Amino acid sequence: MNDDEKNLLWDILWKHRNHKLEVARYGGNAAPEDVCLECLDCNEVILDAELYTICPQETE
Image 1 (tube, one colour):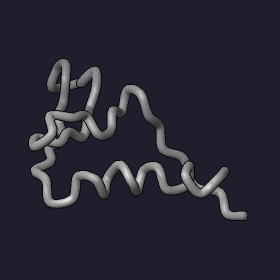
Image 2 (spheres, helix red, strand yellow; image 1 turned 45 degrees about the vertical axis):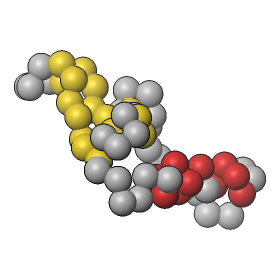
Image 3 (cartoon, rainbow, N blue to C red; image 1 turned 180 degrees about the vertical axis):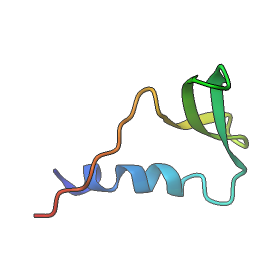
Image 4 (cartoon, rainbow, N blue to C red; image 1 turned 90 degrees about the vertical axis):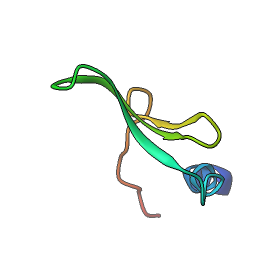
């Protein structure tokens, strides 16, 4: 993994510093179909739980 790949999430989040953010739920309350982190200032979905997964970072 190169440095650009290692810093991708950092760079995406840093771009939205000092913006108004929201965790949005889509679908039913009991079992939402999707949960997203959205920037209200940019009208942009930053992270989408339906598209992304999180796994532990491997150390070299």
